[in-house]
Image (cartoon, rainbow, N blue to C red):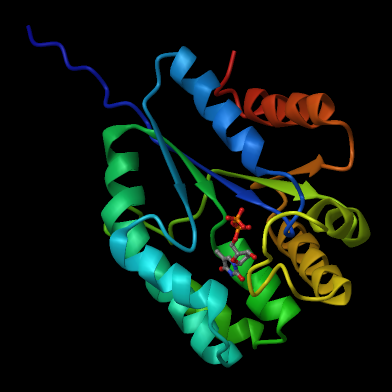
Length: 218
Ligand code: TYD
């Protein structure tokens, strides 16, 4: 008699929010938690995550360009990242923790810059169609760190040199935040809204609870 062991199931979790929402420290802490449970973790980010996509990140975060070029380069970086890093990691059964993904493109390029949402939806379908997925690849869970734009701006003030996006006015981030809210409304089952205005331990508790609700963490 032969016994077969089921391949581990990969889990794809993304982290979203306006600049200054405070998601970064929680991504590392969540990685440690999964590793302590014996899971292999792939920690990555967008735009970026591969040599090509990191080069595109440098251009995207520092060079002025029109909204169409910006959206296309975001999706070009994403396609490379998805094929080279995310899909192989999910196939191995890793927990993939990705700092930003397509919701950021809808929020920043769509709602923030005003780029056509229908075109973004078409690009999303093209770019996230992958052999391993019968439908379009989407995160299993998206943690949206929701914070009022004025609070985020105060957190960023005086921090390191702002990049192209961080230097944008609070009104831009109000539109981006509305974009995230719209994405949540369109797919509420995928999202966990984290109240990121609370003190850090309370935010961390919400992050853990969101993963526990999904049944992935004890
Ligand atoms: P961010 O993730 O905040 O990294 P860091 O913590 O190093 O600043 O920076 C990425 C920036 O890119 C952020 O301002 C949001 C922006 N962005 C978009 O505008 N569209 C996208 O699709 C993605 C992935 C990011």
